[in-house]
Amino acid sequence: MACEVNGANEGQRQAVKTRVSESNTDWGKYTVAYQDLHEFITELEKRGLLQRVQEEVDPELEITEITDRVCKQGGPALLFENVKGHDMPVLINTFGSEERVRLALQASDLDAPGRELVDLMKPGNIPSGFVDKLKSLPKLAQLSSFTPKTVKNGPCKEVVEKENVDLNKLPVLKCWPHDAGRFITLPMVITKDPETGVRNMGMYRMQVFDHNTTGMHWHIHKDGAEHYRKLGKKRLEAAAALGGDPLSIYAATAPMPYGVDEMLLAGFLRKEPVEMVKCETVDLEVPARAEIILEGYVDVDERRLEGPFGDHTGYYSLADYYPVFHVTCITRRRNPVYPAIVVGKPPMEDTYLGKLTERLFLPLLQMMHPEILDMHFPMEGVFHNCVVVSVNKKYPGHVQKIMHSLWGTGQMMFSKLIIVVDGNVDVQDMSEVWWRVFNNIDARRDLVFADGPLDVLDHSSPAPAYGAKLGIDATAKWEGQEISREWPGDNKMSREIKNMVSEKWESYGIKGIE
Image 1: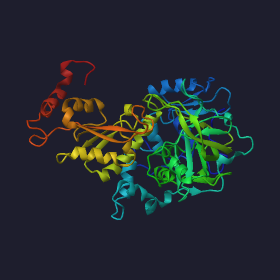
Image 2: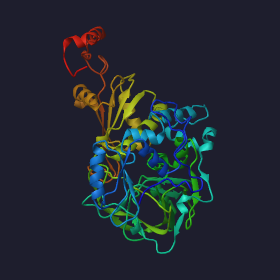
Image 3: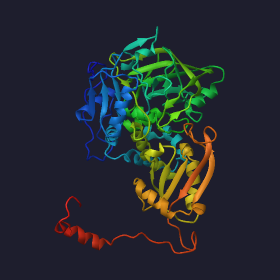
Image 4: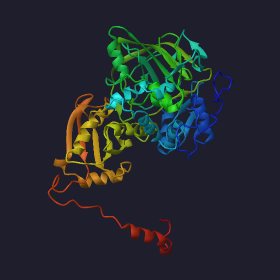
């Protein structure tokens, strides 16, 4: 089935009229938000960043192997138009490069949104705590125009199926050989706090058990799991939106604090509110321009063995008992695209979504910890296993203070390894970071151990979701305060000699080197 932008649908526009150029750094000022996945597909294809695949492919393992090769070699987004046993195309590797993430954001600089978000939070009446700052977002007058907008109808309701719902009609992937089955990997799962009514949107994998039930992989630390715990002996209504505009999809992955609607973040990033429409069978609102909506409920008393699953750590997450999602209704576009993501040993598509999170939340961390100059989540650390920060160290013990502060800040609590380097170190260059670690540490003095919560997917801890963390102080040590002898400086060539050699370089006759 060919994927096209259907200009006949109400409110749907053709290709976006004004897009940011590669040289434009004035983020969001002159842009028009992507309305849905179809507009983003059109833009990707126009720029040569999407490949249509007409050859028949199997959703069981074959699509994963193709996508893994393409992503690891820096290839394009893929639209599989001929999926075995299905008439619905599969879109994958959508965010599989920094260029495509910047295009989704419509910015040449991934740091721009974080800087603007901090600028909005500078008035003196904003709370001082990191989490309190984020929770204050809905109250900021500047963001009021980005709050979700309820509409009467939307493309996601062009087809409504309340009878004989069948998940088997969806081209759900089985990604890795030892996966327990087929998994929906890119759902925007929406629930409401049973006490406050505040919406949450998270991304939790969903193993398809049969034609109308799936698993709901809520980790104990996630907001959806908190809604589930609060409910008591009742059913928790839930909906899973598949597809939508690219920044709403990203927002479902963002580590927002409890009680903050991710749709507000999506609106801020889009510079335009997300249109929401009421569900047919549950009291929830979902993105009106999504491709597919799964409505239903989770029964608090019901659990089922879910997994194993080849996860973003590059290992299989172990089977365990998780809640069951019962589908009561499926609504969709007439010609939907099924969005998916494959996770595994990095680099994979989620690597680049993690980079956006790193850059978006850095300025917010700096509001609490102004001594932090930069931050990096190396892809091998799969987001929660390692974070590197450069700091402006001011006093003995300062580095240790930063480590413990980060472990106490939001989802940074999952960081199993924190490496701290001096401000002159490029944290994005892991070769330089490791050079500093290997040369600057004394094992007894510079290693800090702490116990605390870990990500549920960490298979190395002796107990699930809890274990030891390590901080490494790789900064230069101060003579007389942190070390009893002289600390050496870096051996670097003088600027004068470097400039002289650069000017004479062609005369040396050395080819292929600048």
